Image (tube, rainbow, N blue to C red; front, side, top):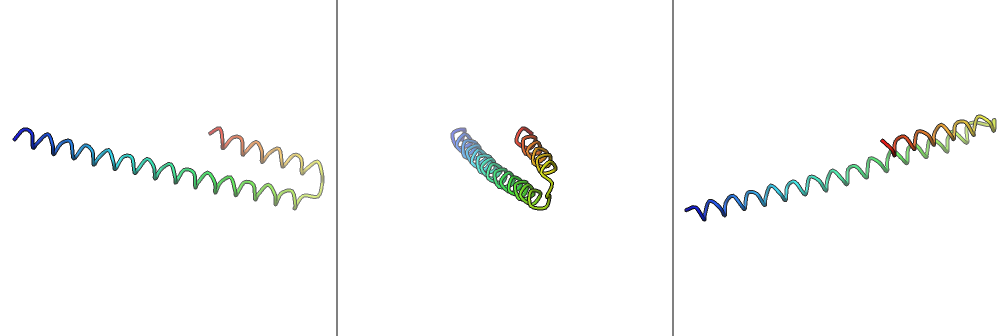
Amino acid sequence: MIQNEEKILKFRYSMMEQQTQQQLQQNIVIGFIIQFIVTSLILLFQVQVIILLSDGNKQIQMIRLVQNVINTIHIG
């Protein structure tokens, strides 16, 4: 009787462990996808800023601003 209960508990524990591993993997994949999308949007914004601004000084200032934003996102 006790052996059966132990087997059931071990089975439940292994199932819970598998679910936890699957959730972790899903969270990692979702995190990478979100990071890729955000980085792509920032780079797209950076390219558009370069195209839209004609004054060289403003371009440099905006590029630095965008690079600071990118660095902040990667640090955070």
